[in-house]
Image (cartoon, rainbow, N blue to C red; front, top):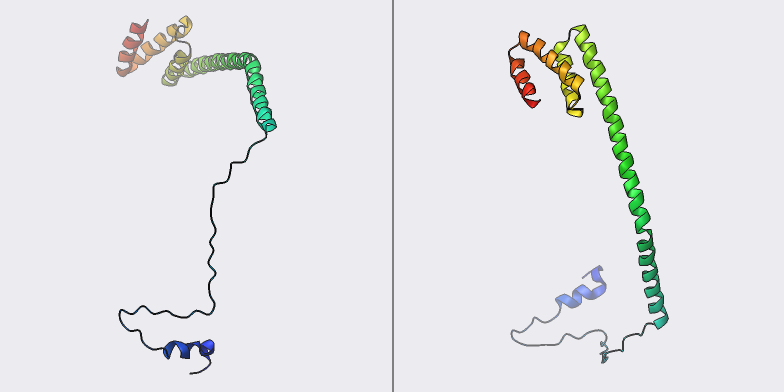
Length: 161
């Protein structure tokens, strides 16, 4: 039969065919060991009470430190929020000054539509500024004389006051 399988191939093909409905036993090369191990419940391992006490102390120390630092954290948080508000006020003030200068410059150079939009943005920052309202009304009246579209905006702006 050749060299393949070291003779196992010949053993497989030379076996007798199985007979139907017969439960036969194929011999194995070695017997299998049977383990009769009995499983029984083991008692749970007892943790040392020292570790339990230490963990409770550490947890209570952690929460006491958090509780004692709570007031300092809240004070610091309020300071940070106040600083942010001051920064926003400062930036709004600078933006308002820039928009007013830019709008005046555009008015002087003859770009009335650009000046109106600058004043409109400045009005979003400080809606109660009297000088801004006056210059916006003047700009809108100039635009209204040139284009009727701005007359409606002038009416709306006048009603806001």
